[in-house]
Length: 135
Image 1 (cartoon, helix red, strand yellow):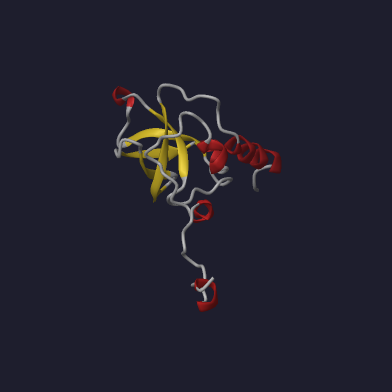
Image 2: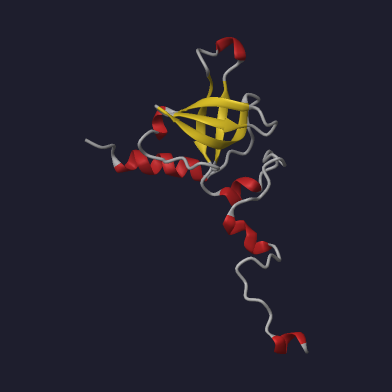
């Protein structure tokens, strides 16, 4: 039997809204790859790679895509059990909302395809016709 829809909706709703501020042990991270068993390799803003576990409330409700962003709660090093260094406590779904926050790391520059429409890139555009160049 699956989870009640309200649980799924609550988990999705929670991940849409960024927190006002981050706790000292929290950091945004970019997902590098899924390791299996709810474990993910993530890159922190300082380029350090950590192995984190997906919080139980998100399992089977929210999928995490590679190169997506997550909010991780990093366990103090003394408390680390095995190789897992923290837990994914939130999944960034509305990236534009999160980017507006002061804690968004400058190291995580815009690289996603839908953000490129703001730039003057010529990728995917037709070359100018001869008549336009003569004007």
